[in-house]
Image (cartoon, rainbow, N blue to C red):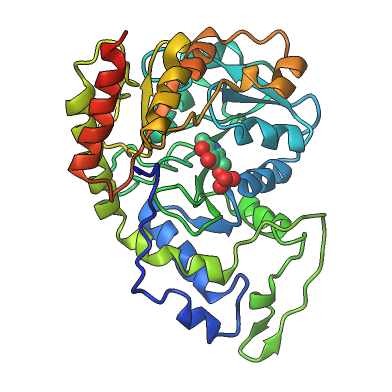
Length: 372
Ligand SMILES: Cc1ncc(COP(=O)(O)O)c(C=O)c1O
């Protein structure tokens, strides 16, 4: 069996030991420590850990106080959470098509879709391939917020065009399959002081002080609620898994880059396969290994590989083709997203995959195509 994913947590590290013997199991000193690591890494003033990317995004959109007519532009081919969070806060999703080569949001199509109601644009660094946020920022009105969906990229270090530099908010995911994980989790980085404290409060039931900040030097600090919130804070238990992975991320990123290059070497001559083209910035991340094959044979290839015990999956479809969104947003036309959504599949891709396994996957794909 060749698994799709393996995490990088180390069995011999007792990540949870310290937390279990401490007072705070919920958001406390461990979360603060991880937030400090994030601020340092991405050179932002604020970092807020959340219990998922999804809840982090909902907290941000609530802090922006969006109204039903307000529009949020997202790329059509992405994970459905990007659209769901906009629907959840009662605003309007506007789908921009993707570039047919890079599979990232097409800036030209995005610019065409900006209206007087546009409040937010949310580019996605899909597969770790970096969207050019700087290019977008130069071309749009100053009152439009940019939220980078960085669920697939964490490569701020050594990166000139670093994550969080040209956007208002950048949001990471620490979901189980992500390159850094704590099972379920997320983080927001930003330089906006006011929004940062609003988001922190919204993500903790609207309270002005979390439990951890109510006792300082043996003094009780009173708290209040000025607006409603919900529960989106991360626990210290989860956060305890993150610090090591953040510090050692360059190693994880290098290993994944090497696996990516080995796959490319094996698969590049198969004429029936396409790969997303690298965007402007080579200093990117490699989160998944996606390939594109003709839509008439994509599912056959998946069935063939699964029979050989090679675990592959379809990670992203065009959101515009999912039943709820197809019915609600009937007039949307994003042909490149639709096409890529029906062609793509992701191969097993993680730091522990062996050269032999990469060869097996590649040889099985070659065998499958030799019969076509
Ligand atoms: C592009 C993208 N955005 C957002 C998310 C949502 O992340 P989370 O599961 O942490 O809410 C995912 C999760 O897979 C994703 O792939």
